[in-house]
Length: 140
Image 1 (cartoon, helix red, strand yellow):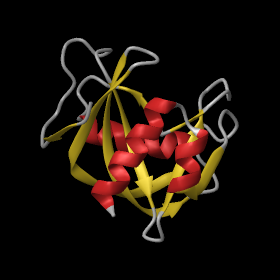
Image 2: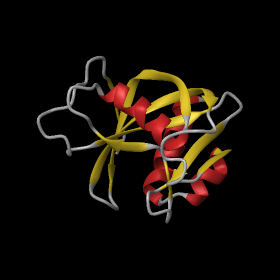
Image 3: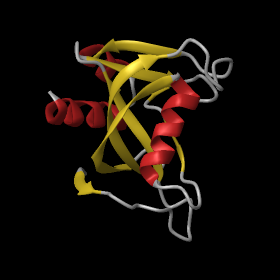
Image 4: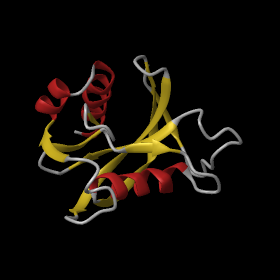
């Protein structure tokens, strides 16, 4: 399920909906940020659709800010996953969090949680649990 790739350019292809981009945002103390889905029914990683004329890295960073108020440094490497639940491909970048802002664009649409990796693995869906488990190994 996991594929590791380098993505220096990574501009969106002609088909923008072939996968979504997101972040595995973590702190040096070993915590991860989760947000609720737009409907608020489940905890997920900050992610969103690709954007034309914008690199996947820039779009992932933008999603982290818009959905969770996160600022930080993205790794150039990305990890590709296939979500069995929604039949969707995900491209996830790791982000070392520098700051968590109280004001961000989707503050009124989502909840945000900073939690341990162990707790995060328990409260997300099976797909996200696998992503968190795998990326935790690679980051720490």
